[in-house]
Length: 183
Image 1 (cartoon, helix red, strand yellow):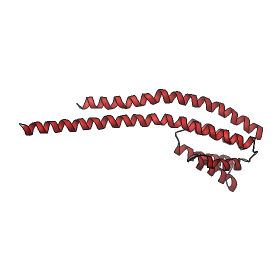
Image 2: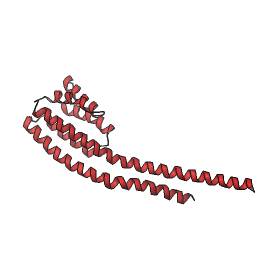
Image 3: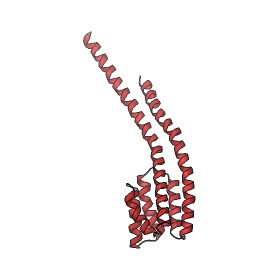
Image 4: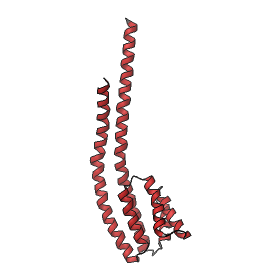
């Protein structure tokens, strides 16, 4: 009898361990999806800082775009420093047209950040406008984009609070549901 009970307890322990693994896994998946919203908000704030610095470089230092991007690259972490370095070095080489340089630089950001395609497209439009506008129009364009960025930041903040919690809770409940179904 004792051997039979031992096997039963072992099956119960294995089942409990499996359930625990399922709950933890589903919770972590929910947290991963939730993190995407927080990362996007952080990326928008970095872009805002970058545009403000670029605005300062153009307004107060009267820097050319090549110099402005070059001086800013050391003030940001990857992938943003790589993006700024890429644009600066391509502008100095003069091998490509400005729009192509911006697009190739934005690929670095697209691959390595949580920014949406809409965010990337809008950054592309603003940076492309800088290539042919005079100083005053560049500043106006950046100010308008900064206002849009404020709205995007507010929306992203709402998404973090709303959808972030939703995905975390969904992860936990999905794990519980699977465990109940396994019983």
